[in-house]
Image (cartoon, rainbow, N blue to C red; front, side, top):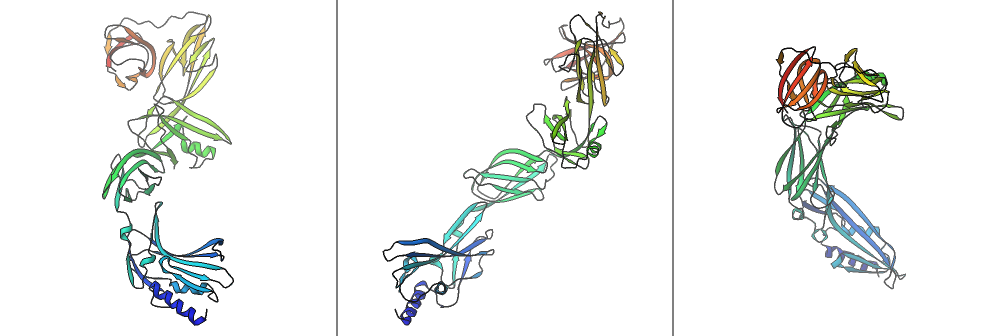
Length: 484
């Protein structure tokens, strides 16, 4: 083929593709939604065949990308005629297949290649991909409206507040669509997480911040702009003292930093483990103020973990409070068992909340007889007592001997009526006592008898109903009525 013939054919290509300027790029304008960053791609495919029509080697594809952040601006696209600079046009035959926008070149050595081009657009948001072919629409000076290719979208605002109604920042909100595996995640600013979503059903499974993850499991139907509000427990802080030492003193003595959070909480039903964070000598967490918790304090020595304090009993935790954890030692003198413990004639130490009662029981072994409990120097001859912990360290010793010991008898005296308060599983007395407590049903049946050292009696084993309490101490009797 002569060179002037080749030139004529190339000009024919220009006319077929609608490009008026032989050497310049094509100017077009795209219209698309404001919320989208569009990407325009020029794709050139080159495939080489032999003279029998069989493909030789792999198909080669090259792409040029550029992004548009603002709609309705004029942009320059590469002129298809610039492609001729990338390939050799010397020799061979040139044919044109306008329907597929292909340039076909057959070489004199019996081989030919097919070169095709395509213009298209795409965008990706939250793992959703959309794409459209604009090859047929690319004409110099054209305006190409792509808005019809985008699905309708709505603004969904998720408000996060605490139980006081205060907006919560830096809370991560996660939405999952009812169909598909994608998820949408935003963090709150000024208490708001703003999503741009297509119509459909979405699930809010959890909220999360620096203090833990909080299950929500709610469903919202998106068909318009909307606002929803969710409430997290109030963020509170509290201090912990163990055997009279604050957490800050314990951290300092062991060389811990704030990343080493040794405090863990668990609800009384063992179902929820609220997350805690230690910072500046305080423990921070989001808690239900009406819920009681058990506390674990874990300290680490090298690679070995040690449970420093598993706390017996429960306590309510409020903002600014101090949780005092005390050591309670139980031991025996003689042949017998002392509870709470499960060893024979040995020592047992565990941790309790200061202000909680501890039930102690002494059981003789063999021919031995129970003599008395000695707690911080004071004796009590009841084998089972509810002792209210007041000190950081308490030692209770159950004494056994071969002698039969008479229990304290009630002396004749006037009976005093007192008032008591039921607090959950405990009966709270107006003052500390060292006494024997007898509890009767309204029909006169004795339903419980226990010793009391302190101001609390454990009534967790009593069914719901009305009762009469009779306290005997120092030869005097005090009575009270209560309802559980």
